[in-house]
Image (cartoon, rainbow, N blue to C red):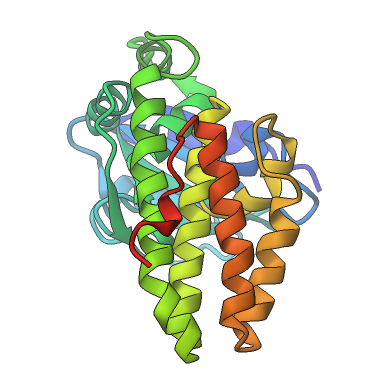
Length: 285
């Protein structure tokens, strides 16, 4: 079934405070399959008419359910609220974004001010660069005369396709994060504390992914599917996903020493991609 985007956009655009609507997620990145949902970014400024938005979501939803709207702040400091609908039998996510905050965050990113915070639904954490990735990938479907999405995209690309300052900080910050997580989990892995060791390994892998995407001037949206998509990038370790999965299996089997041999090799290779000359992994054994 083909979702009628225009019907959704026309209804959302009538809500007071809404300034732009964009298609996001896998649909905007060209990675969607038959099971993918549709993500709509609803950008607002000033006072958003929450009551009108709730009624709009109810009218669009196949079941015309009440209380679909999660207002700004209810899903945490970064997700910003929205609703999960079913429209014409298709799962639809409506995600709210405060234009002024997005603009501030994008400016921080291109200046190299990168942050990461705890956020439900993001097991590694919510990096502020996700707002930059959303801006990069989003496909504008409607915007008012102020053209806020065009303004955001122009700001993001003001220093080229990918800000050199953001790249430098991403590589340095998350290479250190990977090293530190490996160091913290090593003794736990050798003692058989699989839960802690696996958590540390996961953080290392996610940090590596951040580094590799930055080295390739590629915007990373979130953790989902990010490891497998590394195979499509130019600068990367060989067979990274296969090696990570093998290490995970060894951790689960209680073979921490063998798992760390793989993890150490991967870290050294990724350090080599960055131009670092001193092998960080060996520093605090």
